Length: 325
Length: 256
Ligand SMILES: Cc1cc2nc3c(=O)[nH]c(=O)nc-3n(C[C@H](O)[C@H](O)[C@H](O)COP(=O)(O)OP(=O)(O)OC[C@H]3O[C@@H](n4cnc5c(N)ncnc54)[C@H](O)[C@@H]3O)c2cc1C
Ligand SMILES: Nc1ncnc2c1ncn2[C@@H]1O[C@H](COP(=O)(O)O)[C@@H](O)[C@H]1O
Image (cartoon, rainbow over the protein chains, first blue to last red):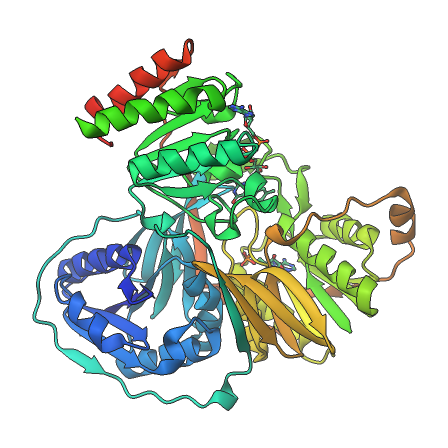
């Protein structure tokens, strides 16, 4: 029986929700087409993570455990994935779209001569392979695409599917893997971690995004305060990541991250299409901008026209009251 | 050091577009140098200015795309190679990667730079596919590059932080537009660009299978995105609007 394989993204020992979204979709497709859904964990502590996966309903859980996977490096990950693909010959390999998985998608597809689709927002199986939808033109429109052959390799945008829990008694199979340092070719010298990035933006239920209108220390303090009242992740527009005000890993948009929270609050952000590309799927959008014609108001459910320095203090107070009730 | 920069001409995403019967209709005149490639060219120029070397740009595209090669030459690249297509092929990232791999097969270079993605399709595949086909080490999503003893140290934007990676030569790096602001060509650059050599190669002359049967991914149709209706605008006393919106987020939306 052919297999739909979901790669489980792990960050600091924690499973990324976006990869469970992909697994849930693959489970659904597998039962629809009478196929097998398998999850794959490639990590330095894969066994511990594999156990947690049983509650998300795969038929089999494969693991590759090796210290080399403590940090992301494309060479060993590519080797591991090629090894797994040879071993189980899947019909589909699906990843959550992250900077780590996008790093290897193209090379993996080229090495295995498989068709690949990046950053899809929907996917289904067809006779020929996979049909999917992808936002294009800075997410202004959607393209329906088809990838032919077997396997097809895809990455899926976060927030595209719901996570469904379903306990299973999936067997855990460890796949032997060894790797010599001299095969590495590239060397990781250092990781500069974003300070204060406690909440993973792509998984946050509430996102506060700061733009060029947030001009100084006082503005950033207001943003921090609002985020702490709402227990929100903080993101930023390119104007502020470029200026070094916020860490580049917090950038939301075409170049940065895709977020799909329940609540997005854009503050002093004009709403350029490249920014909107990364947040348009938020459930409720609030915008605070002093320019009544700012494009962000075209997509905002609640558009507050005004100076953020005047709006935020009473807004924060009100939200505190609402929270305490 | 010899740098090759792979550049692509793409439709300007800011130009108005229309969908008719599932087809995308765009203003054919509004084509630009892919923003991520412009950043790759800029970064190569900065490295050349500091350490010397040579920069050649490579573009696969129809005759008309020569203007994009000229743009990169006007920025300061030394020479170009134009791999000419008819412009009506339905190539995917893998087709472009295969053509580029054939082009690079017998070339000598220190590094190949690509953009991290095409601005119109956001695929982000060609660079690492090309590295895979050439069997060379690579790093994607670079936000900073540094040369030490002829070798590149790449700062790449990872999921939660920045990874600093040594990529030995020959290697490949895909560049984010977050690493610099590409220079705007000045008049002198534009004048000089006209005298810089551009080699023309026909796809047919490269021995590579990019026949339509070999292309594995296709666009079937284009669709409008489900539009969001603009909601209500709140203007007036800051205290009053703040109170109204905060309450509604709680009671009407239940997201607090
Ligand atoms: C290929 C490409 C990729 C890109 N990728 C991204 C991306 O991933 N993410 C991204 O964000 N951008 C991206 N951009 C850049 C994007 O086009 C915009 O330049 C950027 O989003 C603008 O950021 P901004 O809204 O903060 O700044 P601006 O456009 O300058 O807007 C600032 C806004 O703040 C308002 N304002 C000012 N002061 C106040 C105040 N006191 N109170 C209230 N409002 C105030 C102003 O009215 C204005 O609307 C990309 C561009 C390109 C070409
Ligand atoms: N037609 C082309 N000519 C030259 N380089 C290209 C071409 N297509 C893609 N590339 C390179 O690959 C990158 C984008 O890959 P992708 O997003 O897969 O289309 C671009 O930034 C270029 O560096």
